[in-house]
Length: 309
Image (cartoon, rainbow, N blue to C red):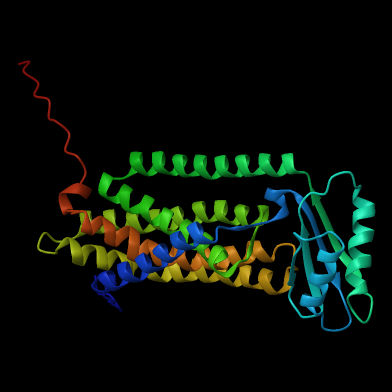
């Protein structure tokens, strides 16, 4: 079969390992130093989105809130200099309506013109703790399920490559949120769980093609050539699938509103990393672990000799 293109993906695997290793290390260091900017979904407390008709002086608003007893308030611009996001830890003995009115009043007193409340969210501390536990368990169980599946379906060298690629995609995607201080809430966790399925699906397609190519290839072809051919054969499918998903979540990021903005950003990063890891992490690691043609050939069934005359 004549191929119209022949890109040497595996020839760049050392550079890819260095690039991925650097991003992975930065993500781990950021987790240890900064952690994740957990949203109210997980921490409990209140979130207020305020809109003003003029640029907001955050320093003055922060100082005013501190003077009025909101020393732990986290204040930042949200999308533009006219929009402000205020996060508060749980406040005891104050109902939500009174707290909202006080926050709006204090915030407006720090600015030349009054603003308006666009969004209010409130989560109790116990609910936040439960969501952290449930979210962590959901992520853990999804990983365990995928590990069992690939272990049963593929030879161990391919399985280890697939699991490593899955950790690579998840850790680095979450690392972006840690490094840049983006809010990590339930919508982002939902995106991470979706990416687990997306990433392993892309890897399985590539692995199946590698296995088919091995069994149909000539004996003189090396495993390096066979894997490279398989990656080239699946390239058009990978590009079309990833591009379709990418354009969809790109539209969500710009037009879907602020509620699902974190979800869309996580999906954008995850789609790029998932496509990249299927080629440069999962397949390359399998070769690094010593994948051979014999590992992917079907097992020969024992022949039973009928001794009856």
